[in-house]
Image 1 (cartoon, rainbow, N blue to C red):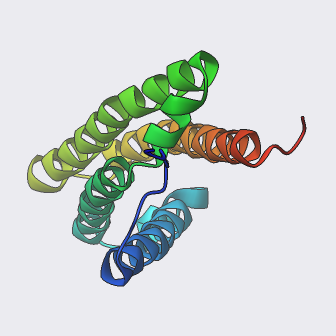
Image 2 (tube, one colour):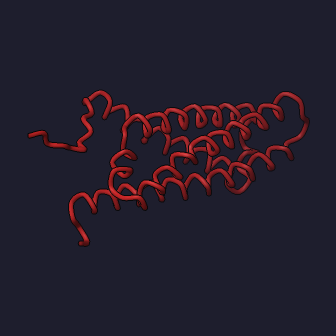
Image 3 (cartoon, rainbow, N blue to C red):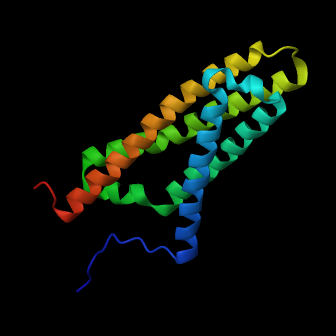
Length: 158
């Protein structure tokens, strides 16, 4: 008799990479949030802000890749149609979120290379805050989905 299990096996190195990714992403988000809060971008060279945004973009790409490779959503997909739809919707948000951050990086690069003054950087900051709000909401919904799937799996709340 075959027994089916939804267990995802992760080796220690991969698990460590996931943990390091999360720490790095949170640190970069914190740095960019600080940079764009209360006009603090004026305290730093625009080129440094651009480089920080590019680091964040690259880390976000790693973050989404690890999330999708880890298979955390697959367990949700197996639970119920409601969770499946939510998991697919959240996975489909990865691309647009990443592209929004790419656009922000491009605008910043353009400003660094072609514009005088720093008013353009204020517009970059506004776009970042838009990204940040969308990303925070996305991450909260992913966490809620994972918890919901876990509770269904363990029978909590039945």
